[in-house]
Each structure stands twice: as C-alpha cells, then as structure tokens.
Image 1 (spheres, helix red, strand yellow):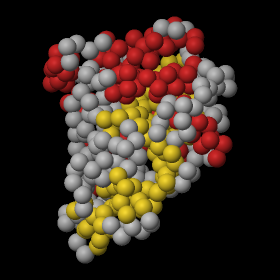
Image 2 (cartoon, helix red, strand yellow):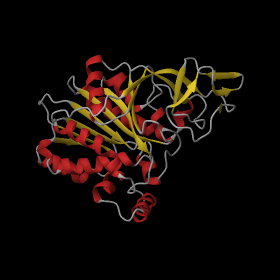
Image 3 (cartoon, helix red, strand yellow):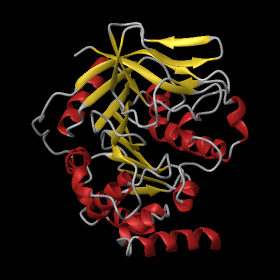
Image 4 (cartoon, one colour):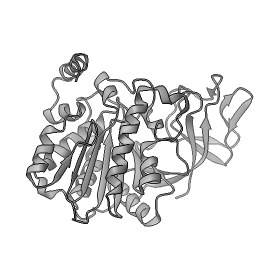
Length: 341
C-alpha cells in the first residue's frame, strides 16, 4: 500500500474511533491472517488477484460460492459484515462447507473513501466499454473477471455469487435484490429461497445486463447470482451492524452448509418494465434527488426527458429504482419495474 493510501485508512480508523482488526484488514484487502488459518486447516488457498481470496477443497464436490463487497467504495456496511463473518469462520475453518471466492471490489476507492476513482466499476463487466475503457476501474474489472471465471471454470454445478451493496437513496424496501432472469430455474428458486431467509424485501428480475458484476457471473459463469442491496451507504466503522443480522445469519449458514432457516416473509417480486438510458447531457429526471427507490408513478407520468425524447410510465403503475441523472452518457439512469408476485 502506498504511503498516501495508508494515511487515508489511518484517518478513517481514527475518525471511527478505531476499526476492529478484521474490518481494517478486509478494507485494506489484506487476507494474510484468514488465508493462513484456512491453509492450516487443510484447504487450498490462493490469492488470484489483489483483493481476492480463494479457498477450495479439491475433489470434494462442494458448492462454489463467490461473495463480493466494496464494488462501490462507499458501500461499507457489507465490508464490515463480511469481515466479521470471515474472521469467525477462519477460526473455525473446518466448518467451511463450500469452495469460496471472496472479492473486495474497488480497493482503491475504499481506501480513498469514495464511490469510485474514475467511473462506476459496476458498469465495467461488459465486452465493450466505450468511454469507460480508459477509467482506472477498467483494469480492476479485468482482474475480477479473470479470477471469477477461473474460479467457476473449476466448479461443479452448484454455483452462487452474492454481490453485496448498499443503496445511495432511501427505499420503500430497505433491502432488495436484483436477479438476472437468465439464471436457471432450479438455481433461481434456491436463490430466491435464500433471499427470503435473509429477509430481503423485494426482488427485481432483470432481463438484460447493465454491465454489473453479478450479471456477468450469471451469464458467463452459470452462477445463481444477485446484486443484494442492504440498506444505505455509511461510514466504515460506523454502520449499525444489527441492521444486517438477517443477511449475516443467512450467509453464514450458506457457507457452513447449515439447514435452511424458515423464510420470514416471501419477497415481493418485480420485473423490469423499461430501462431509462441517458443519451445526452440534456437528460433530466422529472423528480427530485430525495425520491425513494420503489416510488410509485401512475400511467403516463413523465419519468425523464432527454432532448426531444420523453420517458413516460407505460403500465397502470411503475416503480422507479436506482434513479441517477449523474451517470455518464450512454449508461442506465434508472429502472422502472412492475410487481408480478
């Protein structure tokens, strides 16, 4: 780590009153401690790229699970959750029942306390990046793609990828997930059951990629993948971890191969009605920046304008998710969804 990056992390630690060692290590993408504990327990351990840890038991016919955090550097709650969970599991390493890939996504942005350095990493997982190709995050996406593909190329049929995030905006559903519609039906059913165990309130079935990490692993690696939104962005070391209890318990159970817990409530299921693409700098949303995710809009209501083109609600009701007029031209500025279950 550079001297500048070390100073940033030190400032974060001091500002938060001191981070637990496990959280500090994961935030710095330092897997040395947990890697040694898993190796001592007889696992094959590798660090396939910076910020990535692979723990496997060859020939065991186990499920393969990838868990990623920090794809956006300011989404710190999942970093803390995974740090504590991984620390506890490494000290009881024989209980790891799956082959595991852990990815700390945008390491430089985490160290800088920023969402990204040049551009949104979670739009880089696509074959053609256009103006994004020159961003610092482009090289990081290549590292993550190579390590993820290699991990799943050696995997059996049971493949999972949980990409843990927190949202910029408040939401009618404080926790929700986006699941690629192309995930195989049996695997999708198991994934939705797990999301219910994790008390996820809503699921959006997404028919096409926006260049996200989870869509890449579903499309190219055959994983039952999901982007999981777990509340709001927060400062590292200052998140209320009690808000993550359900997902932490469900994730720990998945990694330890524990019996499934009862679903607290079935998530509401939505499908994408339309994508709102920003085609020019004239793009304007029709609502303010305080608009919550899953805010309902009636038929014919204006969603956004972009020069002469006007986006309007096509169904009797559509709900807006991820409205963000500040994205680069050519990228998705929001989703409109309708409830189906």
